[in-house]
Length: 501
Ligand code: ADP
Picture: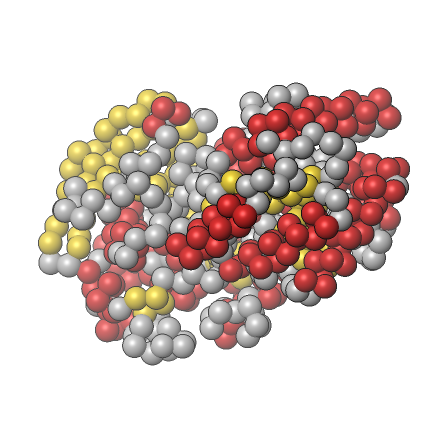
């Protein structure tokens, strides 16, 4: 099949969170299965251009629209890690993608609406006829609307559109004028059946547009598929999702097995192979390698080099990830004699201040390390060096960090929500067979909930090495690669109209 991904992120060259990992990992696996995959991205100035191959101008003259004005765009082609990518560079006076960041400006809606319109215009003008246009989250959710209400009439032929919801919290609420600017008559979409926001009738909701107009909708885990249809986790779109549930499917994300592989991860000081641990000798080698990575991390972060467990988390610092509970877990770990490593990034000034203050408070504590940035290299080393990985999220559509932790032999401690329910199984209480359990879990997002799992994990680490190593082994035996999810996407893509419109 010929599949075009249109997205705001691609890991690791333009990544903020899991969306980027998914676009990368899924595309790699679809290519491996023999499909033709192309990815369209904004040409951000903050892309790591040194890792792109064959970067060149493919089209010099692609006109696009912003209100009554037309702007030229340069379309670049390149390859990244074997993936074919197109980069859209608008020659717009607002320098949409030259701001040194991906999200977080006052005109994000304008930036991504313009990108969406230009991406479809590019496919149309270049005579491309994809079988599938796969769009991701609110930044690209207007694309199915543009396809059905504008480009189909213009004669653009494609098989069908798919919208993947990675996180329902962010919806792209805006004024009807934002649609008018990209060539749709905004006021015409301000109705319940179309793009009107359910909570604020004066606003357009871009994500709702994708839900209403896409031929298929996916979300990133089976549990999240159910949760988003409830008022508790539907963020105001639950009724719309119930209405369109016939086209909604939860497909559990995978992780890219090559990118996240402790056997060859360039950021580790000692490698270890977590495939098929069928002898105690292999397990001993893993423990030894993790110890050496741990020693390196401790030296590097000025942590005391003692026989204490390291509890870690690698996360965006936003409400969803329960910052209060992360802080609570840090104090609890210290109280119980462990060490805590936090790698957190945020674009929210209050959150930055809060954790900078904590960092300052902890600066002389040799059992705590807090790093406040987005740092791929440290993330990899932390996954390998930590003993436990805590994820107390208030909601979690899929969550990739627990999957990475499992692959690196680091035991997850997770709140039971969304994809965490589908991937982490409590060693003591899960209904799964004992040999398939891989971590510690808790239900309620409060300090008592955290303690109920964290205390058991710390106690098990200290007092029952055999049980601890079984949890590690069973976690490393889990297969959360894209080998399972990619065929599910393919059968969904194949269920789209086979005829090009
Ligand atoms: P979300 O998409 O909500 O941020 P996921 O668990 O789906 O959460 O994906 C998070 C991805 O982003 C993982 O690959 C994780 O390693 C990475 N990540 C999160 N925060 C950081 C950070 N501060 N530095 C480096 N990588 C990070």
